[in-house]
Length: 110
Image (cartoon, rainbow, N blue to C red; front, side):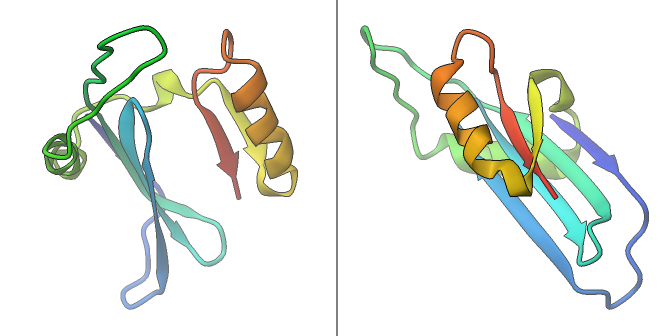
């Protein structure tokens, strides 16, 4: 689990909350309307692999991951292999799909 803060939000300032419920972790990003990252956190959870080309996750795993994100104890930055600007989001999806041997987690940034 990992949590880091960015520049402080002003009291009453509108914020955007982004959640990425991925195959390896829940990642959370809190962003101000001007693009400042106010906070970020993540929590990993297991993926069961019962056979070739199969992956399973159980619904009861996600509340645990949300609780870990809230506690602030897991390093998300270590799994991000690429950061691609929002205006190149199509390239980010292409990279995630076609470079599976290298692209661990492709993040689209504001």
